[in-house]
Amino acid sequence: MTQDARFEDGGDRPLNLGALDGEDLQVLSTLAQDAVFPATEMQWLPQERRFAILLNRFRWEDQTSAEARGRAVERVQAVLLFENVLSVASQGVARGDADTILSLLSVGFEAGEDAEGFVTLTLAGDGAIRLKVEALEATLKDVTRPYMAVSKTTPSHPE
Image (cartoon, rainbow, N blue to C red):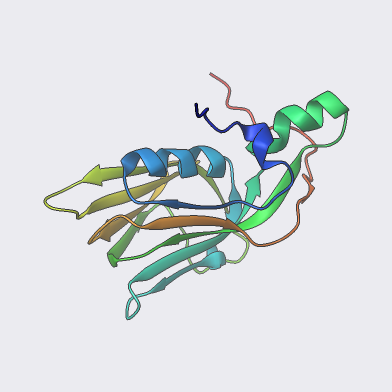
């Protein structure tokens, strides 16, 4: 008998997850929710058909454990990478300004014909980034050790 994985199963190990369909991408979206990053940490490489963001991800998978042990919540730097990117468009994003800090709310996929479609990264403050992809292929990979979240609080979204 097999059982589903739990957040606690990950412990302190870095994430390295991939997404090849909308369901997979929903998992990455949940783990990347409330990540923050300077606008200058986005890069599109048209020749390689790649779009990447170096973000500071809130460690949702560690939140319950941190609170239970009475220790501070953590963030970790992670790369959110998309392959097969044909074009990139944005709205409400000042891309060249190092002082502009963006906050990722969600990542969604709208399937088109065959395997192609659109990935939408929704940002706080009505910003969005839209990627046209030939096929969905995304990776979320932690690249540093976790560090104490500067705010020392869990992100929240007032209703």
